[in-house]
Image (cartoon, rainbow, N blue to C red; front, side):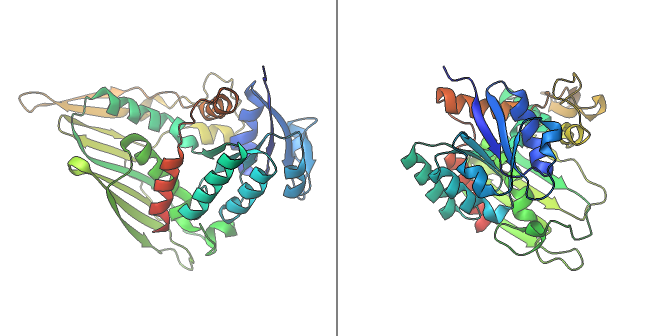
Length: 337
């Protein structure tokens, strides 16, 4: 029985170094085989013996590689995904998967015709925030949920150095940067909305792309979900607010994995993925007399290794990957509208 999936990473910048390589290296079902580094060769210092290709075409041409992680600028995803699939590789693609739903459908059809698998990298499903909210919703303690607010706010007034996010390329701007995260969290838990409404804004001096968005998702039974993100929020409010017929759940955005990984924390550190004790979510339930009672809920442990385990199980044992084609298409139809 096959035990290792030979894997290549298209770019070894922050994304490759922080969000992919440590997990591919740690998971016993993968072999971290190669990366692309166009100029500075740094990967071998972290992973002795790794191959560092000068070009992405060289990486794709490596016949040993079975899975390629596409973590390049958003507007390149479609082209590199198509080339990788035609070269006989499975692919794990960072969000947004593509710029349009038409491109996504084409790639899913191509993968099926070639007997290859597509995985979209929605790591935040394995955040402590997302898993904690899922647990509360599925417990039924909120009753009939009628209103949900998800926010992802930052304060970054200056125009960033990553031109693929700041120039008007396909799939650029805040909507395509953080919108996929919020949409995936909503759609994965509540399904595809029956309708939606979207507002975009440009507020930073000199910006060429949107730096604000609000998406209203309307569901059956008068459930309304609001997804909001801005790059000009000096005092971020609670990131998750859920209101139901029996109570409310409120929580700040507190997953620590990205911060820990950026600081070089190893995945086997007992503190990895554990939120600070003061970041618990607050669950408020109304009793039969209309009196509130609040408790603080311990957060689930965040662990992105769960995503890579899901990829492994899908390739080796044909287990369904939790981020489905239908969910990705629904997300992109909202982003591109």
